[in-house]
Amino acid sequence: MPTIDAHHHFWDTSRLAYPWMGDDLASIRRPFSPVDLQPLLTANSVAGTVLVQTCSDLDETREFLGIAGAYLFVLGVVGWVDLTDPSVADTLAALRAAPGGDKLVAIRHQVHDEPDPDWLSRPDVVRGLKHVADAGLVFDLLVRTRELPAAVRVTREIPNLRFVLDHLAKPPLASADLTAWSSLLRELAQSDNVAAAKLSGLVTESNWLLWTVADLQPAVDMALEAFGPARLMFGSDWPVCLVAATYDRVLQTARELTAQLSESEKARVFHLNALASYRLR
Image (cartoon, rainbow, N blue to C red; front, top):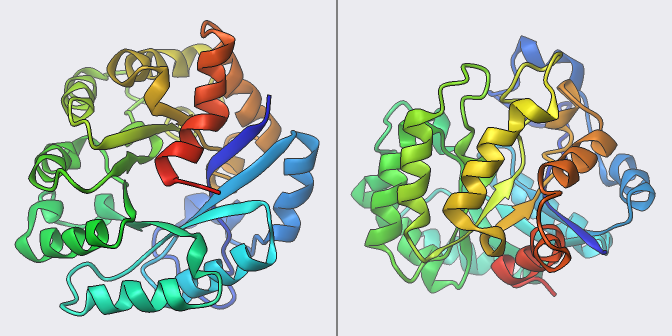
């Protein structure tokens, strides 16, 4: 079965700033490039990937589009734009006209790092998101439980914008109290324009050193209940995942967490849903 990794990153700490990369992430605070990932994809029979933004910098998005043009395994790029900029429509058009711009499939903002839990609902942000919709792009939701109410509201306010939920909204696996997260996840899943949610980033939401597949299973079971196999897709979250697991282990864990699915359902989760949600070629 071919596999699409719908969520990974590259970064160069020698050139750009990554405010989220604190001392707890010192082990991955170094450059990661396509040359580092490509052997892992080959070893694990991963046919293609979606490269996702890591900082609020247009230069990174332009660089990622260039990488996508040079490396065929990068099927799509989730970039960044300033959604509050009145000229965001022009920025999106310029990115799509740039080298590799045909690989721009989505926009993302690190919403969970904003001080305001309702940032997504701000009028200037909603205006920017409507331009993302007009451009025919997806918006990746990077939120935690705190921001899920605003995410629910905005998905319903902009029904013509397709959304993809990153990392299942980061379930608080380390605390083992999934009550609030579960309720809000179900509510978000009721928005039909949430095209998919990613089975990604879970190993770093649990105990980094002691996690087991069983620790992650409740969150995946809830996601399967809320979204179903037709709206879930695999992502490695490499190289962030390396603080808790190797690439190989993350992929194998995802397969174990979905072992109860039929072969056709697994094909949706590990391949087809990424192609459809991002309209990858």
